[in-house]
Length: 140
Picture (cartoon, rainbow, N blue to C red):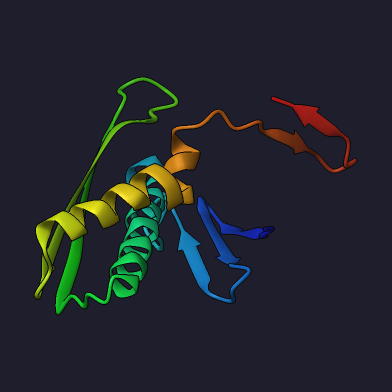
């Protein structure tokens, strides 16, 4: 997967995802932004919720279960010191419909333990590298 993010002034950035959707990111006014887009950390929490939500709907559908309503509340706690990474993320699932609790629990466990690539990326050691104008790859 590959994406390109363009700086659009001050602290704002815009991107079109590989699937063709536009994302705008910006910082708060108190740190030099103009609040024209979501914070990257907000997008990260949304990505965790969206990833696991898609998994759960897929798994429940395969179990021939159909929720009538489903929403996800996500709460993240960040460290006080830089890089201020997330130290805890709590996900609350609210589902309605004829859904046996043990099957919902199984779908959540499968998502969190096996399928959700976003939450697994957060908890893994990722090798990161970078390059600058000359294209030479540097290690982090």
